[in-house]
Image (cartoon, rainbow, N blue to C red; front, side, top):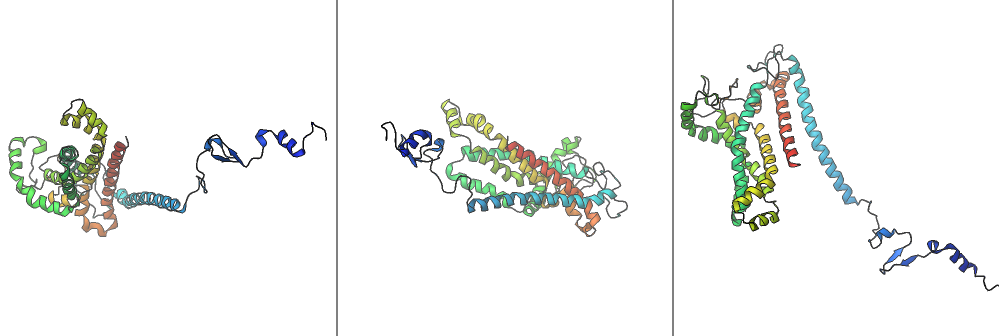
Length: 358
């Protein structure tokens, strides 16, 4: 064998070059062994037996249950809307008046001459709900700011629980209290307001308006409804206000701001969208209230815009007509009103969700 000839095995190693040498383990400068074929970008990363893309049984079960829950609630809401639409189709076809403009008395007994419309129900529902919202929003804002910024720590939990308990009181209890206590109590106040503001349409009275002695009018209903939606708005706003970054509060205090200035310039701007979203949720709750308004507000077949007049909302109209539900077609007229309420509530809640996601 010549001096310049090498053994076959050594010649093969040299000819293959460094890139093709078969080393099972290469020791890097860090001292960590790198297996053959491992991407240098993942060096030092612990290798798992199943790989990153492999789902464990628990993950699959949780993902399935989460997806099933989301799909179920979507299907249920769609099913309710579809049911209302199907049941309302035939009565709407038989209706001799325009459903969206007819403001007269409902007549659904004669199936060949049905007459019904929603303007009175719509405006009564909207008026009572807006009165409740205007009263509840500032009070709820004050409660939320007090509990999140001013209240002593040892009193925050009991006071917050007390406010939340209002949401657990049944509607019929609020209705009884409003009809038996609040309405008669406000009678003298209503008489005084009407004495100097009776010429203004908001404080006007009519021949068939409910007497002030009972106070069963739109304003009383709005006040009762305000108390009912108060905990929803207050709880939502408080949960947002307490999330204000402490660094922002401490910075404002370090610059010499008073407690009120901190609240006005830091806490309220930070949680304003949450407060508005909570108010929209409260409005959605108010739009569908039935029993309390059924007991507090005297029914009326005509909407005249006065706070001292009676009113019939979507929910109370459906409750008042329960005797007609033996006939599916007659009941369908009220289901059509329920469909409008369903859409209106859905729109309000969608607006609340859009505000939260801003």
